[in-house]
Amino acid sequence: MIFDTHAHYDDRAFDSDREGVLESLKENGIGRVVNIGCSLESIERTLELARRYSFVYGAAGVHPSDTGELTEENFGNIREALKEPKTVAVGEIGLDYHWDTPERPVQQKWFERQLFLAKEMDMPVVIHSREAAQDTFEMVKSAGVREFNAVLHCFSYGVELAREYLSMGYYLGIGGVVTFSNGRKLKEVVRYMPMEQMLLETDCPYLAPVPFRGKRNSSCYLPYVVKAVAELRGISEEEVERITFENACRFYRLSPEIKERG
Image 1 (cartoon, one colour):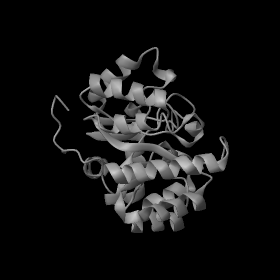
Image 2: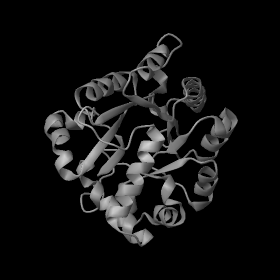
Image 3: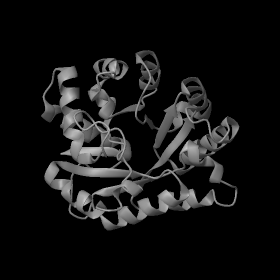
């Protein structure tokens, strides 16, 4: 079984067939999914999915590009969502300097606030970092690296920075980019990193692996990521699935035993 640790099934891209896609996952070897909230509205939709499907869990947080919606008044909505029984992490939170909106001080303020909320609630963190390597690293260090656990979602930096995060005990999220012909940096990271700190993810509907690159992604395509990782590591696909499933259960503090009630 494969654990998709980062998906966005609440996205509009699934509005026409969401139920069918989710109900097809088990027959395609997907045992669990964590749907990641990225805005206040997305958090609510994520909670609904987690309540409806036994194999779906949720994360609650506001993506850096959506932090402009946060206020002192509505920040408490995230805290309340984290109290839900199937909410397993704070995320996705972080910094995104690619689009660079809202302004960086706003992103940084709410990244810091959500990091400290994760510490307060004693929950793992799903971090988004795009073209913001140094600031992300410095803010994580300032927040107290050993006081919470984190995954660097859709890791896009090189081995040098990977080494720093791995030494902190953090995890790296590996997805469809590892199958891209121009994904050389990520392939190097996958060869270098300990398997015990790898999580598999889709970020669906985005970043579909080859041969579906450019199309809508789903958890059903994760076997292509498994195959790429197995080839890079020189191990079997079954071993990749087993190790990353166990890693995800450890990170999200879930029992590795799958039951019908989730």
